[in-house]
Length: 459
Image (cartoon, rainbow, N blue to C red; front, top):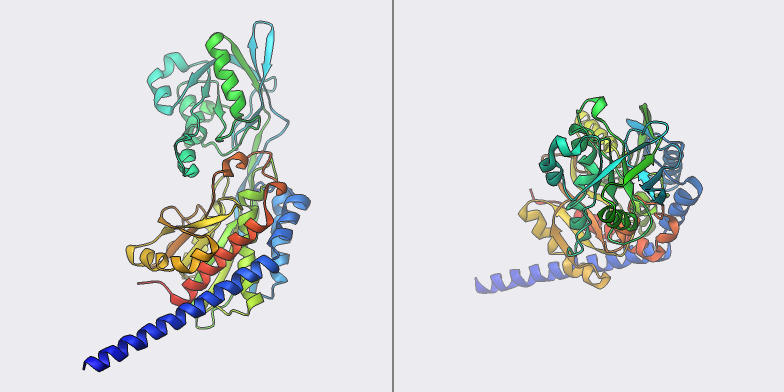
């Protein structure tokens, strides 16, 4: 009896060691393919430098859809198709103007309209400006002190957070909800400090949300650069009665037709089980969206290219989805989930890259304890590639709506220290992306997808 137990244990350890060796070898092949034979960097070059910004409803977005579809078709996939989705169309208009009037002196500030904002009157607007640090402080001031003023939200990202996305989350409510809450109290407009840890002269856009408030309460909203916010705050302390002027001509049009771009490798054993990898194809209009999220799109496409290059045939159906309209509506993610439900599809895994093209550090995992532990158990396989972070947390905005009976969702986590230097700003351009870092991210994604495909999820 004891002999049989020992033999069984030896057999099991031998099988485990063989599997480990096989996985180690496959990860080496994945990384070699990505670092020596990748297409993601030239794909991003074209998206960024030939097509440019890709705001939902724009000509750039249309061109990006056609380009991405054409490139996926070159990979010889089993299916490549477009999935219709209606998206908002918001146009920035003329370059914004902002300045503080102190007596006869004008102090100019770099500003930009927040996405979805209404315009100022054609001649602009000028009013006293009131500085606050939070929505709670605004509410405490009340209508009497806010009405007829421009509200200046000046809460910076907290530099104490090592995780910069936590710093972003701690203050982004003033951008997303500031105009709505100030409008309810009779404010004329809002100016919001850019979501950026660095002090520079670049205003960072991003969506603002009016919710269900009446149209007459919808007030213009603009971002001001971090340097500008510092100077404006000091100027107001010295000149509390100074008036701020700004002008913007943005406009919202009727929704237009756009598309999610989908490419598919059919599973050899379980074609009915779907594994998704993706990013969002749209971007804001100030830069060319190289980090946010051109990088995530081309990395996701590269995963399929890697598998083709190394001759790997997935057991489960592998689907790359380039989502449209993450930035100002998440229409692509919601439509993908709607169609998935309509077609009774069974998604078991989803991986999103939407945190920039910097060096990969690990993964943020939405899963039950059993699946989280299973993914974490692969940490030693990733150690040679400097991947060390396996944490529970948010996976991604576009895969967020995706639901199935059993599904694991994961977000790629690159080094985030520089991400908000570029996020939603005019310097989010191709030159800010490092080729090798981009390729390492694609390899990390392909490696996790391979391991999930081989081992499945715990039900």
